[in-house]
Length: 506
Picture 1 (tube, rainbow, N blue to C red):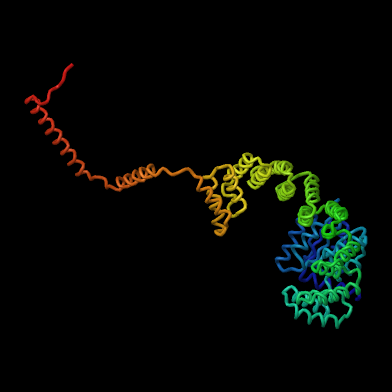
Picture 2 (tube, helix red, strand yellow; picture 1 turned 45 degrees about the horizontal axis):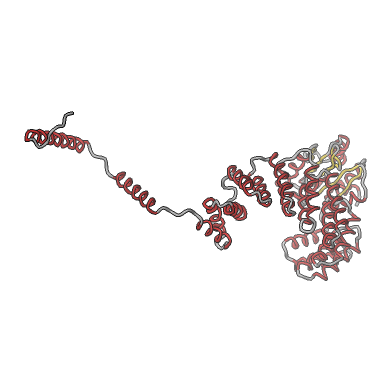
């Protein structure tokens, strides 16, 4: 493709699209502006320079929401920190975005990893104007007949229309028989219709066609993993040789070795995974830690605890985002019977969020597992003071709190928690049995006292309903009372005279 054709591709793109560049390299920023305005001859406002990752991310998402296509230039290093985390976050939020990574040096391993993350081009600086335009054009390149067919096939696969996708792969492979992406799509379509063996053959053909292309290996590893085939580990190791900077693959390799009881090999891969994440300053280190725990907790809880502690101890500042790791660590330690260590973990978590009822509740579980029931109840009560309704919606929490009340013979306090479990799950036999047990142990009811209280309430209600007397009724009542008093006095006087009633004097 001639130079003027590259220029035309970029110019046409800029008429409706935009370029965002995340860079602190003033020389490159100036050069890119000159390329667009003088070499390309575009005078519109389509360039958006950014020096901060968050601002660049927000701008890209703003363009996405407005339906504006964009290309993003990203420096490999911004200041003294890698931008890998930005690339991962942007690709997650904006999957179809096109990115060009700018770097002063590029190894085979870093280029492979960037391509695996979804980067379109890696541009090594210093680069001539023609090289920048050529890479831009290659990133933007208008759809060819082959690309149109591949885009259609990708859409059909996303929609789950595997038979139609399979027909499109026939047309792709007629246009280019050794098209590795086309063969991968064919494998995906065959896998979708349940033809696993044929899918594996398509993936293998793609790998043989283009050994450096990682998609076939990824698909093969996943296919053999589902079939519990030994070849899954071999393909993953081949992938790791091509792109050794992917921390998530290290975790999967560790999981494979743990399935074979090869703990030392698994630990070596886990260590590499965490070191890679730390080196790249990935904010997803926490996510990776969760994946490590999920992958190894069942078979090697010691390893899960080790890496959780490593992540937490390695942080200079701990925040609420780390509470999930404290919680997972506490669960792992409790699962090993190390309840005292779990309590220490929860105490550290309370330094971050003393007002979090979940931490108090979890610490209560740890104390309970250590048979310190009174202390455990104190933790539960602290959680309830912070949020009296925190257990609502959780059968486990309600069941645990009710069961500890029952264990401590606090039968009346236990009742509402078991009742809540039965509200959520009316068929819960365990909760019903414990509720019946608690109710049977309640003190006997004083029936006579209840009847007197009921009668008093009824009388109060009757009196309360009597209408207030009118003024005329009040005056008549007073006259009747005076008349009655006068008659009573006259009667007493007559009785005194007759000697029937006498006054005793002392």
